[in-house]
Length: 133
Image 1 (tube, one colour):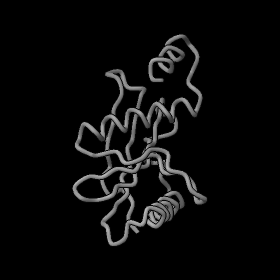
Image 2 (spheres, rainbow, N blue to C red):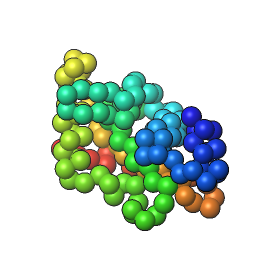
Image 3 (tube, rainbow, N blue to C red):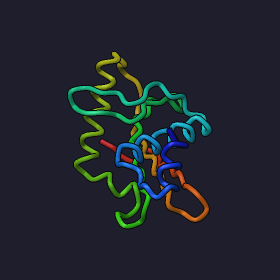
């Protein structure tokens, strides 16, 4: 997927929003694994919406929101996590825990910000406990 996306982009065709999002999630999952997170699930869907990545790290369940930007015109990726989005992520985390019958577990919400437009290549930043309830 990343090679196809890069091939399209280098060939002059910019990635679609979905392609950019998928590529960012792939990059985020790889970085999370490298840093010791265990990926439990990707693209968990329920009636409230979708969680990009559900992982475990340090004994906690981690709800991961991935934000990817290919240019600086829209600000830093993590800036897209508004107060409304934060509330939705909390609701999605609660729904995930309830559906999986994970009671009395510690959990948090991390944001992974992926930038692909930098001269030195891409940058991945993990913002630990970025949203709190």
